[in-house]
Amino acid sequence: MSIFKNIFGKKKESGQPSPGKPRFYAPDFDKYDEFGQIVTIFDYTLNPDFAIANKAAETINRLFNSVQVFKNKELYETFRYLRINKTDIKKFDRFDKEIKITLLCIASMNGNGYSREEALKRLLEIQTQRTIPFILFRLADWVAPIRKMAEIAIQKLLVAKNTTYFIQNHKLISWLLQVKRTDLSVLYNQIINSVTQKRFAPEQLKMLKEGDRFFYFKSLAKKGLLDNELINQMQTDKYYLIRILLIKHFDKVTNKKAVLTKLLTDKSQKVRQGAVNLIAKQEVNEYETVLRELIFDNSTSVRVEARRLLNKIFDYDFIKIYQEGILNQKQIIGSILGLSEVSDKSKIPFIEKYLDSDKARIKTASLIGIYNLDNNYGTEKAYQILETENPVSTKRAAESLLAKQGIDFKRLRRLYDLTDSTGKKIILRLFNQFSGWSVAGDFLKALTNNDKKIQLMARVFLESWNNYTIRLATNQSPEDKHYVLSWYKKTNEMGIKVPGNIPFIFGEK
Image (cartoon, one colour):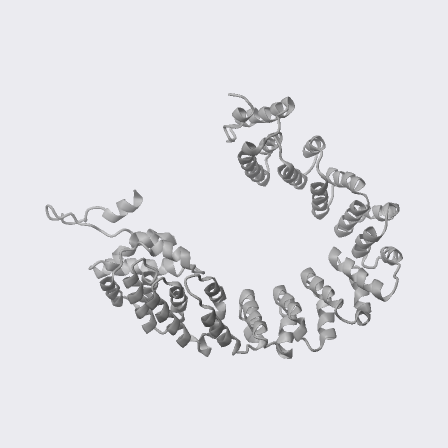
């Protein structure tokens, strides 16, 4: 209704419309602030009154350029039903250049083939990078002449000054290979060839976003153009996926030991994991020193592989190594975790005393180490962690262990009343993970908490439970029914809005 009110507007302040000739007024364009509203006001750009048409066009230009990423299907579904014909497109010439480009881009997504063709012709006359995505979209057009026109245009745009723009639109370039209507692989390769002809200096690469740099290096690797300079840039790039890409193309590296040694000490766990897996294909002896460091790594998979590779060199006593590491306070976290992986339950007392450490990460490592050696005893320790004051990170580790093992609902419900906000959130997440009939009562109870974040979490979980109950096939116990309905009654008394079908779910009218 608000749109129609805006369209028809109110009477003019002075003067009345002639009898039998209703006067229409433009809406307040300044009130439009969403991309989808472009469809509502597009007809006004064709209005013979230039003031109205220009105001509408300015608004559309603002809304259109507020979008960061354009997607072919979404744009087509949005603009396909606009009433645009070839003669209408001529009217766009009366607007400023930037506005004209926007209107032509929109018209190029129209369902009318003649309109699309005319809009594309006009776009090709304008030499600007803004038009490139919309020319690319027409490569998938179902009208063959339009596709051919777009293809020729893109080939002409493959010049050095547009290289960065093509890189920045790499998602659209990759989209070309997904087009089913025609085979665009040849054009795709032409674009990749154009992109890889330009070499960026390190300072120029820093100006590109992470994903853009990844596309650039991936294109170079695909074309087999990696050299020592590029490899050096890749191994020092801040984006970890680029360093992983280097690992995938390690066969192109000439100074393998130097590069691999650097990657083995990378700050990214995924990079270190990929790098340590490469050692098996190299001369393992050359990496003994760095492998002796990696057996203390924070990553389980890295520690395991490092130990396996070291055993090819010598029969190491890892239990002794890890115990000495703990006693000497050397890489104590990796030592605790490593010891739990190579020893047995007899080492639990040795590790357990570090649960009293004043450092959260050491406490967490100790808890995980105990669980590794004895799941049941580790689970009991996890409950105790939640029952006492502990750092958030250690409590979250306890949550993770309980999620593996299963939970004691009654024990956690008693604990819920005693623990802090962090503990309450952990317990609610555990209830949500294991679910069942009775957890609705726990979520209803949490809605009465004063903490807004706990209330929000409880409401999300309760809505999820409400949708999930239709798939539950287990029987309800009288205890579950009483627990849920008692908290349902409590929330109603407090005026808290909750799903009204809960009594029905539990057999109550």
